[in-house]
Each structure stands twice: as structure tokens, then as C-alpha cells.
Amino acid sequence: ANTVSLPFHVMERIVISVTSKANKDVRVVKENSTRSLRSPPFLEEGVDRSSLTLVERRPLVALLGHIDHGKTTLVDTLRNAKTAEYEEGLITQKVGVWPVLIPVPNDYETNDGIDEDDENDNDVVRDKSAGVERKTEHLQCTFLDTPGHVHFYQMREDSARVANAAILVVASDEPELMGQTIESINCLMDMDVPVVVAINKIDLKNSDPARTRSLLEKNGLLQPGFCLGGVEPEVVEISAKTRQNLSRLERAVYRAIESRRPLLAWGDDIPAEGA
Picture 1 (tube, rainbow, N blue to C red):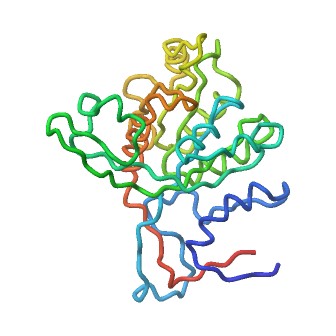
Picture 2: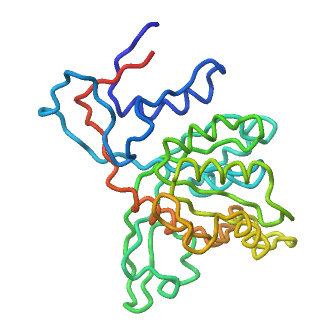
Picture 3: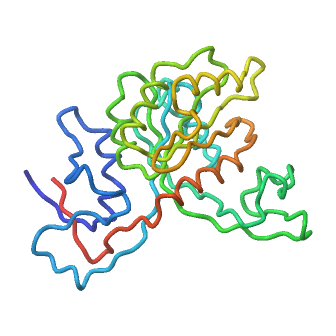
């Protein structure tokens, strides 16, 4: 096969996108399926490591769940974009790779310390106790928006495999857990990825978040003491459409990412090969 040399960080960003668009005979192959996600990427034998630099890379956050439960809408809302409107057939059919800024929580940022009016403000947080406004710092992440259709399991699995944290999006208007919701839970369990459960569509009249929580408990995901990636899954009830509780979701995602840091990669001075 023809080869091309690229910096590792470039290969890291494009491999998921390329795989999702490729034919079924093209697969992502892990050099070592047991290595920690905290460890730096594999280097070929004979490479002098002493002169190379390690840098902290962007976290990868995978979104998984059943079709039409609001994954792309959620990413769009976090990015202030309108990708979902232009999807063919109004459903996601490839892995979307998107840069997303997650606000870095301050010590005073608790549910009691933030004005409700500021829940949707990603730039300024008002501290009630101090009576001041503070500029919010952001963590640069890469979100992997996976399709929820039954035929796209491989894309979901590949994304979960490389993810440092995941968001499981579950619609609260469904009377039972749907097929790809259960499949996504099993996939995340296999990959042992820290998970934040986003119970979505709470703005709908037939929404029942309590029922959804109960179904997830019966499935085993929300059992007391159950951990993925070393942490218990957090649950946030949201509306991706109206932005309700998205700040709480962002803080939960940040905590999931923090449980996996530092996330190391070799710097730009090491080439990577792709075929």
C-alpha cells in the first residue's frame, strides 16, 4: 500500500472521520488493545525517545445512543451550529468530528452558586456569594457524534474505543430503552469509558425522566456503586433544544474528562504513518 508521513496529532484527528466514511474492508487496528488511554501513543522500535516531547492532547468525547434521541442537536447547541438541519434524511450517517469548548468549573460553581439566568451563559458566571462576575476558562475537546441507526454499530464502537469520556443520550419520551440505547450501554461497558447520561427531551409534554432513570437502573448502568472508567456515571436531565440544564451537563462532562487526565501524546516532532 502507498504510505504518507504525517504528524501524529494530525493522524489522531482524522482517523475516526476517515474510518467512518470508508468502505467496510477498511478498519482501524489498535496496536495494543490493553494500553491505558492515559499513556502516549505507540512508537516504533528504534525511535530515540530522549529527544521527543510529550504534550497534553485534546480529550475525545463520544456521543452514543439511539437514533433521533438528540445527539447531533446536543452537539449543535453546544457549538451554536445547525448541522442537524443539513443531514441527509435528517439522520446522522457518519461520525461527526467537532471541536467543542467545555467551560472549566470554578470552585464556587455549584448548583446553589449559579444564577438560573446564567445557566445558558458559557462566557460569564455570576457568583452570588461574592456578587461578582468571573470570566470562564474553557477546555478544548473533540466531540465524536456517532449515528444511532442500527446499521452503524461499527462507527459507534470505533468512537467509544478511542474516547476518553462518553455522553449517552437517552430520550425521556420513550416508554422503554430502545435497541441502540442498550447496544451503546453494552459497548461503553466493554470499553470501560467514563459516562455521563444525558436524559434528553425533558421539554416534551410526554417526557418522563423518572421512568428513564428507572429503566437505566434495571439495565444495570445506574446501579449504586457501578463504575465505568473508575467513576460512577452521572445523570443530567436536559433539553438540547431549549438548552435547559446544559451547564450542568458540561460540568459533568468536565468531571468525567478529569478522571482520565493527563491525556498524553507525542509532540509534532514525531511522524506517524498511514496507509
